[in-house]
Image (cartoon, rainbow, N blue to C red; front, side, top):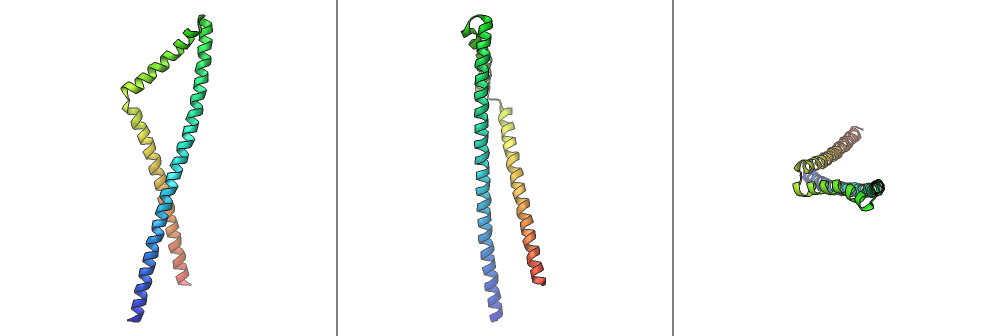
Length: 139
């Protein structure tokens, strides 16, 4: 009976330790995912900002060039800005759902891919640990 009590205590201790480790692993995985997404967001933000600045300078150069061709600087800026303003208005007023849907699908796909990758890594780690414990028990 005493041996059974020790075994039960040992099992409950191991179960408690397993749950604690599993919670720690989950917290670490969630933290890793959050930092990954923050890092990607910052990288994307910086990239899009640099791209936007390049586009602005290109549009200014094109405006000056067209202004010189037409003979009026303001006309060059008006000609170049008109398509940009129209495109902006279309995006603001029409709010194309296909663009939003594509962005959502892409983000969801990336999230699911990264979660599947993490899950595969966890399973590999658990399999490795299990095989290590079995080989220790056999020795």
